[in-house]
Image (cartoon, rainbow over all chains, first blue to last red; front, side, top):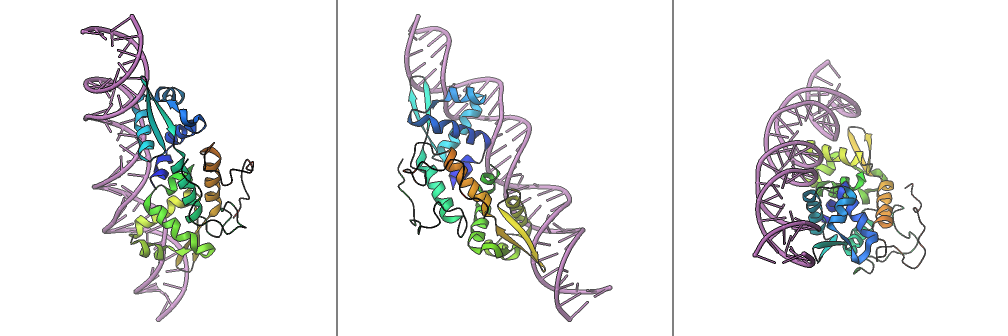
Length: 108
Length: 108
DNA sequence: TTCATATTTCCATAAAAATGGAAGCATGGA
DNA sequence: TCCATGCTTCCATTTTTATGGAAATATGAA
């Protein structure tokens, strides 16, 4: 689960949370750096990690590079945790229904 | 989110996944070590991490120490990811209903 | 008591991850 | 062509995490 490692760092979780409400347009790297007060190299490092985890995508527009959240992996992560880490507990989305066994829609 | 860090390691994720289906009784440390072929010190180290993350609990029974999954934190983690990391995507458990805003039942 | 078992803590070492300055590359404007 | 801007890669350094032998602790049994 690379996604877990991807999110298991304060800076990266913060980056991802900034990107979530920004939707497909995303946010330019510079803006992200400004908001979190990160030196460019550090920012780039974490964005690369997120990218390798498949959590964000990159798109160049003029001089800026826009990053956007990629929900598919996030969805898969939640599905994985729900399926594999919650047996017999209150974690299931709906404990009454037999729970569709392998995953919901996917493809954001 | 300490739970993320807790699970973001192969060994710890494997440990937790062994504990999930074991329920409240849990599994003795020794058994866990045998199943994952871990030297005692390494095992203890990771179990301590999981415990600090609130993901597992400890209980002594005779000479053995039993570890059991603690679902509350897991539940909170899933709720957190669903609330904060999925806006406008297919991640929500049920995209039709208005989604109860702060959490489901809790207390496993 | 003494001993075996189960597990932890101690601690030195090794490996992995994060940090950020400096140099490099791409794009667009003058 | 030259320059400014926006970002990335390079890389040396620091910090954090993981590893596992050895010693220590707790429990129960002989």
